[in-house]
Length: 153
Ligand SMILES: [Fe+2]
Image (cartoon, rainbow, N blue to C red; front, side, top):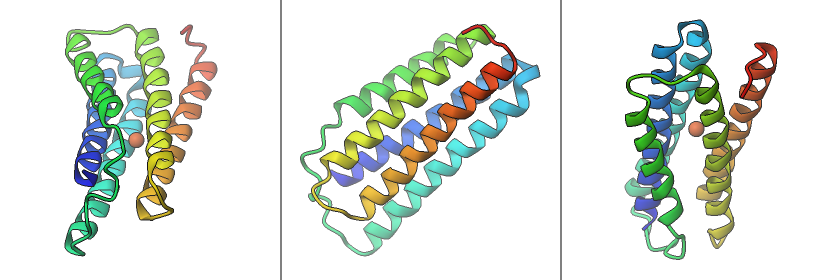
């Protein structure tokens, strides 16, 4: 089960990265911004991947988190996947930023939810705490940029 959580979490980070690269392709004037956001999402995916590898190498029981409900994170993944398809041909600058703000917010909520559902203080909670902090940073960075560039979301 733990493996499933981590796989879905990795998938979400990579989908966000792909989406931001799509925004970059459609909006060259924000290219630098989206590029750095996309890179960091890949970094988050690697962070989870490394954690997963260590766990598996140590032969940890993956039943530890059997209570965590995967429905929400899977729904987030499906939603992000659909956005990538919808925006393939184009997306307005405003909608791109509005979407990213929403997604970072729900990623943060989801990462928190996993922490709260984990039974004990563990490396899993630490990894997800760090991810959640990263989402918040992204959320704030988006808002700063939106304000600085006067983008009407
Ligand atoms: Fe992330």
